[in-house]
Image 1 (cartoon, one colour):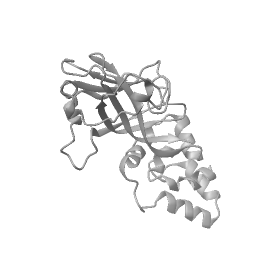
Image 2 (cartoon, rainbow, N blue to C red; image 1 turned 180 degrees about the horizontal axis):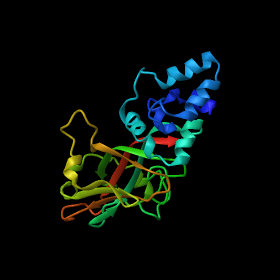
Image 3 (spheres, rainbow, N blue to C red; image 1 turned 180 degrees about the vertical axis):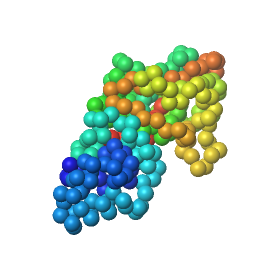
Image 4 (cartoon, rainbow, N blue to C red; image 1 turned 90 degrees about the vertical axis):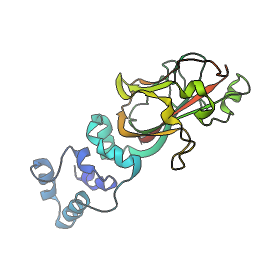
Length: 240
C-alpha cells in the first residue's frame, strides 16, 4: 500500500485510481498514513493534495475516466506496471462496398495497414478515444505496397464519402452514433489536422472488446473503385 501511495504523483486524478474522492472517511488510507514516519507521511499527503501543473489534452480526459477502467488495468497503473501514452489506433480498408467496416475480426496487425488484430485492443490496454481521423486515397494498384505507400488526404476530394455516414461502437455501446462524414471536412479549419473530428464526449474502449467503426455510403457513383479509407482513433492508451 505504501509503495502504491508513493507512486501516485504521476497522475493528477490519483484519487480515482485508489477509488477515493479524498482523505476523509477512508480508513485504509488513513491507517497507512499513520504508519509512516512524519517526513514520508507529509510527502505522500503533499502528492495527493498537489495543485501543481495539471494534465492536458487527452491525458487529462483519460484521468477523468479512471473510475471506469477495469480493475486489472487500474491496478497496473497504481503499481507502475502500466503507463499512459499518446496513440492513434488505425486501419486501412477498401471502399469497395456501401458498408465499409474499418476493423474486422479477421484482421491481422501489419505495419502500414493496421496496428491491432481481430478488431480488439491487446490485454491490459484501454484507449480513451479523444478524436477520430478519416482520410482517403487512391492507390496506383492493389498490391499491399501500393496501398501502404499511397498519400491519404482530405475527404473533400471524394463526394460519395463526404455524403456518407460514420459510426463508432465498442462492445455494442455507441461512442459516436450515425453522423455525417461532412463533420470530417476540415481543409478550411486551420486549427485542426486534415480529417480530424474532436469528440466533445470522449469515451473508453477496454481491452479485448470488439471495436466497430463503420462507414455507410448512400451511393458509390463517382468513387474510384480502387479508393481506400484511413480511419484513426486518436487518444491516450495504457501501455507497459
